[in-house]
Image 1: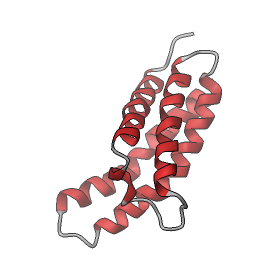
Image 2: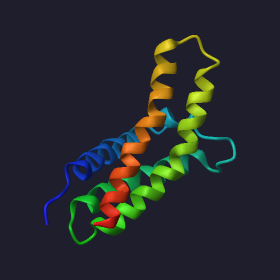
Image 3: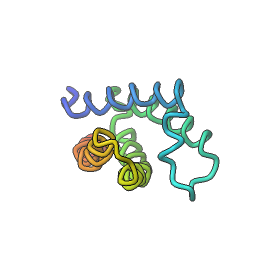
Length: 120
């Protein structure tokens, strides 16, 4: 069974993002919603999850479960992306605003790819 291109792209995004979560967790702390407990631990855990899901998406035997896990992860981190966008409104940095708001619709193709992998 060949791997869909969108699944490969999602796996690559998760692999890179997962490593960044582990190597530079402080980069994500400012976008964590206040209601999320143990920010550092959640960031590190999501990094590990992203790396595991990346590997799972590439392996035929685990692709479906990794697809569902990827969907759950993407939906779970969406509030942080929303917070980043709303926080960006308080800055004068136009580039940051553009990036923060561009992340929101970019999540949807990733969600679609995860769902496609989950459904086989």
